[in-house]
Amino acid sequence: MTPHPHHASKPGGHPGGTSKGATLRLVAWEITRNCNLNCVHCRAAATYGPYEGELDTAACLRLLDQIAKTGEPIVILTGGEPLLRPDIFEIARYGTDKGLRMVMAPNGTLVTPENAAKMAAAGIRRISISIDGATAEFHDRFRAVEGAYAGALQGIENATQAGIEFQINTTITRANLDQIPKIHQLAIDLGAVAHHIFLLVPTGRGKYIADQEITAEEYEQTLNWFYDQREKKVRCSSRLRVPRTTTVF
Image 1 (spheres, rainbow, N blue to C red):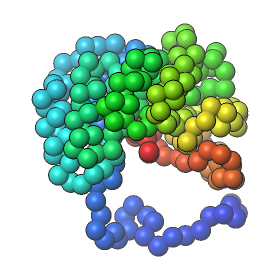
Image 2: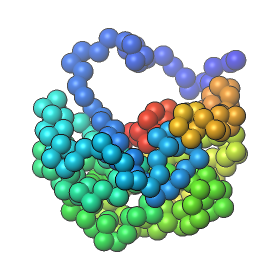
Image 3: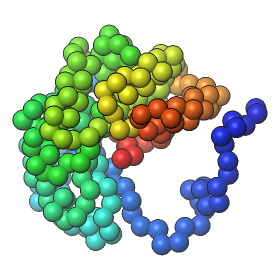
Image 4: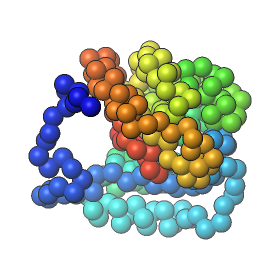
């Protein structure tokens, strides 16, 4: 295959390359498995709990103490649905006060005006919300809950009103591959600061739709298309979805 004209090798770019003075930059913390959606691709097979064995508040704060000793990384509070934890704002505020950059990956449906205000007060600087279809019908089917699309859009509006920036995440499958340009345009229209794409990982519930994985060639073509959108108003990126809601902020 002929290389895309924008591709170029960069020394030290490979994960196994030499890096001097490397520090912890990003922590994706699945703080709960509890979730109000039932997404067909969910690596964690998250659903309504409660689940035993999750860290209590005191243990969460101790973990943030330990993370803070490594530096000042970005800490993504994800899940499941992080807003289902009643102590989530206390945890976020504690991390903020420790000098950590606290961000969150909710699904949007619980980002009410009240919760958005609490997120901002706790120091949440950005959220990521997943949009996996260009229509409500497709997105709701992917998330297995009617109204998930409308809830995500309302959550985005509420976060924006509270002064919290947002990015859009999209998991690519054979079913929505042709919708990516429309989803990307939606991200621009909504005012997203970034649009990140992810590959389907066939674990958890994702294993039941393993036949929906795109090919390596399709992925390369999609990456090239995204690269060519760099002049648009929203930053594009791609990361493998491991774990389910790991995002780059």
